[in-house]
Length: 501
Image 1 (tube, helix red, strand yellow):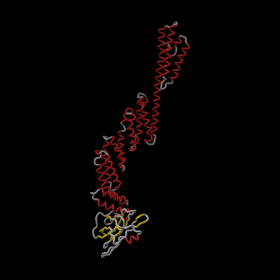
Image 2 (image 1 turned 60 degrees about the vertical axis):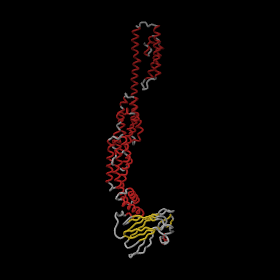
Image 3 (image 1 turned 90 degrees about the vertical axis):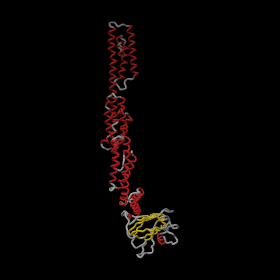
Image 4 (image 1 turned 60 degrees about the horizontal axis):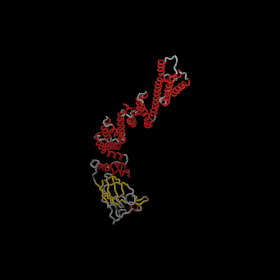
């Protein structure tokens, strides 16, 4: 019983000093290995060895004591009582060591918590969420691991507050009303339950839903208002897909309808910009669920129809004739029943002429047709390939002349002026125009031939009492077929005389 304490006291009673020393050395070695207490504890093999020594010492002591009585010892009572008391030594040591080891574990976990805090602080100190995302992820995983693996430890009980602080740090752009910047970090927070589990996050697992819906709506509508409907539409699409029952999802349709109305009402101020935005709204409404954006497409398309013509006028007045020509032509081709279709077709012709002859773009062609006398202008094609003649002035239009069979390009402008459209044996394709008096601008566009041909513009004034002729021909230059200044041939003058161009 005395030897079970591990101190070799039984051997001391028997005066077996070397054996007592062995027991004491075994206990001292165990204490040296165990102290100070560490989280991983004492190696199991060392504990087993100590127990084996104590048990063998007890058995050997019993064997020796039975053969050598101890005079003066009341053996049963004293030895039993003393042995039981001394058994408290290893038992108490075990309890004390367990407590010390438990405290060591607490300290280790608190140190681990501190390292995780450092990761979260480092992430918060970086410029932008993307730069700190990796550290945030490691911190969240560290907190979740503590809460899941050691739920009763002091460190684990601090995890909820630490996670709340991390969430606050990640969601900082949302608190600062930077909704577009907040979308990515809030989306990240919303996805954390999938990676670390809802149990570790507690009430934070669903916290990002509301601010993310708010940010998606605010950012999406903000971008739409700034003319970035494509990017804003991505946010609104995500909002309706992820949070279809949210308050914000219900606001999308009315907000887009209001935006379409405002852009339509502002067409007189910035027609092209607002028309572009209305087109984007129409395209966006086609991507979103129809039940969520009722009426948006119809409102936007109505505005686009009005705005397209207004945009053409804006471009024309600002001297952007190539753009205006395309805008007016597209309008006329698309909106065949619109009351402005004829005006757009005339404006497209004038804008095309003005590309080559800016004087033609000083004002839009008149909507009506002037009355009074008209003069005759006969335009003929004296060159290879078809030629399209565009004209604008008091009236605007275009005519196309067929190719002249057998006509060739001239070697010089002088040769063309002398011979164009004057061979009585040749039938020159021609058109007769009846024009009111006034200043006119012309554009001649030669059709495809074996060589490239540049367009040519010119101007003239049609006066009462004259008839006019015009012959289009080409001159072969270094760069291909080049139209000269358009030549003319006088007709037999009426009583008032004749004039040629």
